[in-house]
Length: 203
Image (cartoon, rainbow, N blue to C red; front, side):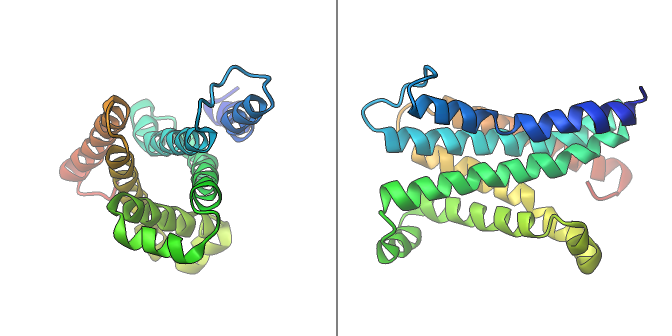
């Protein structure tokens, strides 16, 4: 098979189906089937798990374009949409865990929390960006927005920066994981900047 066939028939379907893996693992853990340790505070564990998974999916989404340029396999670009939608799915689960378990859907408290706690403000801002990107991921939206679609979807880098800061401010002791995400993001941003510097083309 050609590279296009491999991406279209094997890799992309694997990404679409495989994205449910973390959610399935978590769900089986809640049923006591997998070995996930929910600890003394299951709600907090759920929030951390879904938040970390969101960042993993987001970094994978941002890796697609540099990988396509590095390998010359242009069909890899078709992986961005499913990875981006899985990113939003886990961001939504993360937000729902916060709204339901942390705040019991008390909207007054939620609005106060968003306004007063910086890491919540930053996390909510990242979620709003991901929501906008998910809502405009269809072919219809691409045609309707035209060049504005490209500008809008570059905000994924802003969402990634906000997401890393959200995680970093949240963690009080071991910051190694959010720092690792930060390093990966810096490398991805550096690759994007270097391409623009060399070719003067949008990344």
